[in-house]
Length: 292
Length: 224
Image (cartoon, rainbow over all chains, first blue to last red; front, top):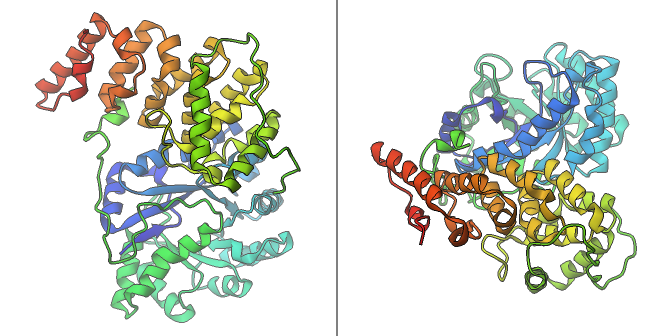
């Protein structure tokens, strides 16, 4: 099973996760820029974070045979903090970089006017840079927030095929499907979605424009739930090609619209020559972390 | 993205008045240009001519510099020094288009704002640029990184010329430590000394004590 996790915050994960992910078939990831748990106090700390997403983290991933990409944005939560808003002026410098495959995570958290402003501005940046947009749907008032997000997306004029609405569930999938957007689902141990509920949604809505991610981060989450979802699909009667479509070809198609995916060496067709994990192989030791 | 009309012929290099000496002899810079022309197809050659014509304006260079890999390729560049990639040579030529008195400042900016490939590009370019010792802080920054691509690019001819001896020894030691091949270190035979040999022997002793392999490249450090 080859797996592309289209939403995972590897900065918050360990090298043991990278190793386990590779062994489970994960060969490519997209890491969206997001809230770090601890609020930032200036655009400079965003710049350092973005630099890490473009520098250190892809290197870390490459040591485990995983191709790492990212999305760049001011996240909805910190769009409310006037100290952070000037990061919007920094974004154009980052949106021209290799491996930046979308503008995101953008969208609503508490549905404030400040969030809507940052959301609209960043959708325009996506259009200008010919990049997809990755839209986080809120945890609270998800249905209302999703509909409001779709209204902002429509108003922006961006092609809905260039937008993924993420963290969807049974209550919000229909509006996202009808809007023509891609549909993202975060499979979590307890909250959001689980593998069996995901399978039921795939049975009902089909596999087209469907993206399944672990959204693993610093909270209770599991980077291997993409694989568990693939197995649940097989157990429910989907075939290997369906699984490959959802877990590999769909994210490649969606983020491939950026023209900046780099999958050379990791994109062997399913079932053929699954590349063996070269865990921690660069120096054959763990010294890279302390080599300075 | 539209490209304004521009001369199709690749422009000549600007003259370099005394804004800082250049480490690499002119024929090495010319060889990079030729190596690039051998691998680019006519369409890309034309695109490069346009990009280079525009890059004399730093604002245009800032747009083109990050995209060099996806516009021209990331593969190894035959005919260039070991480890050079197509995008490295393109980035060098872009920086060579700058007005000489702005080169050091713009090179520093694209390094500081760059991803790992852009940073490597600046480090590779340094010996070809008229910046004198102004790029040495970038070399020091790269040598603090643990990404071997940056360390490898930092220990080239520019470091051999401009890095002081203690920092240069530490750079060589770090190459051994993170397994960057010592053939990447320019001027090794000229600059190696007894103190470097002693430092390397210390590393070897630690490795032996831990039951681990001693890097084979260590032999290259013994003063000849």
